[in-house]
Image 1 (cartoon, rainbow, N blue to C red):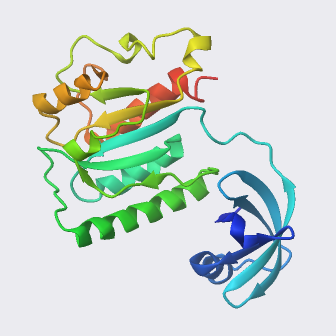
Image 2: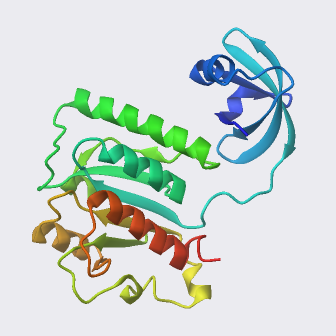
Length: 253
């Protein structure tokens, strides 16, 4: 079933108003009709079944039916700090990371990043494109929220004002420490549930410098190995997200 997000301000008397590109997509691309049922997420908080009431101009009216009590979001807020990769890899990473349940994505320009978006125009253009991909992935994967993709930032900028409770960095030169050796990961189940937010760091194709790893560790972060094989940057982040969701999020059953 097709899914749409609306702001609370676009709901009046149990009627949701779908506008803008979503209105055009609903009518012109999906070719939905009056009486068809869709899913509507209001204010990134509550999911409803909705019945299309009118298809008029640039604003379509949808009557909100029964709310859903399905739990869609992980109890763990994951921020992925992704070193900027080459070509279109970032789009794949964003799409799959949203499907796996991340809360926020921060594109990072590391020292060894080949891609360096220096101008504000280039950064805004990329961020707009990436946010659209996150939006479409959130609809496809039935998310309640649309994970935010921030503007690209330099590594040192990303290190400022970290708000997560813990930081973990996938590092190919780490030989001893695995994810289960991280104190806030390796706890019994009751203790695990107390972890509410975590930052996961993945480098670009060239990897992290030793200085960058030290900076993360100085913020009480831990470098971990993801196994004996070297993973591509577009694989490492998705593997790390899945492992952390299994241990502390909502994939472990």
